Structures are given as C-alpha cells and as structure tokens.
Length: 145
Image 1 (tube, rainbow, N blue to C red):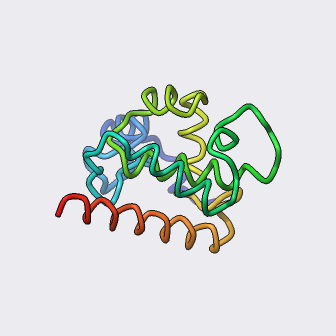
Image 2: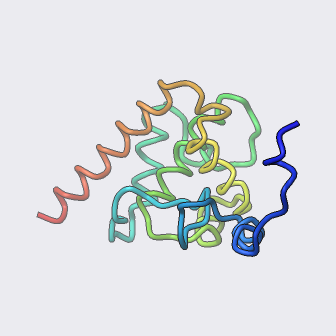
C-alpha cells in the first residue's frame, strides 16, 4: 500500500481543498467561466444572436426559447445560450430574464460546452458556434467603424 495516500493534509492543503482550489492555481477557482473576448457593448446583441441562430437552424425566434421540449431545439438553444453568455456582458440572472430559462440551465449549457459533454461532444457544433460567433463579432466591428 502506498503510504503517500495515507498522510493527512497540511493546513495549507486542507484550506485549498476546502476552497476548491487546485495547487498552482492561486486565487482562481476551477471551472470558472472566463470568456476569451471582451463583451460587445450593444443593446441589441441578444436579438442579433437569436436572429443568427434561428436563421442558421431555420427555426422561428419564438421557437428558440419557447416552451417546446423537442429534441431538434437542444443544439440551437445551447449555442444561443453560450453565444449570449460570451458575447454579452450579462450575468446569468440577466440572461434568465431574456431566455425565460432558469439561470442554472444557462450555467449547465455553458459547462457542457467547456467540458465537451452532451451535444458539445460533436466537433461540428463547436465549428458552428465559432462560425456564428465570428460573424457576430465581424458585424459588431463593422458597426463600430
């Protein structure tokens, strides 16, 4: 039996373990969502996200965040939630009001993309997400100019 696994934590290790920190990650909690770009400062960015996603998947805007639980809406909703979180400066509770979903649902979809689980196992969904994100960023840059 390996004796290394039988020793007790030191006080510093116990504090780090209790706080959910990893060794080497000072002052940073794991699984914290940090977008790789600065948010677009635009009031109508969420409506443009809805338009882009609904046009790409050929579904109605009302259907995108409606009450339907059909399977064909899972990927578009997840992409729209992730785009909204990354491209807007909105918090989860603010996105809750816009999407009419619970904020934990949005957290769940963002975590799925980051961890490549669920519908995000398919690399094609990441490619579509990146394509739509780049189109939205290009539009925002054109509007700024």
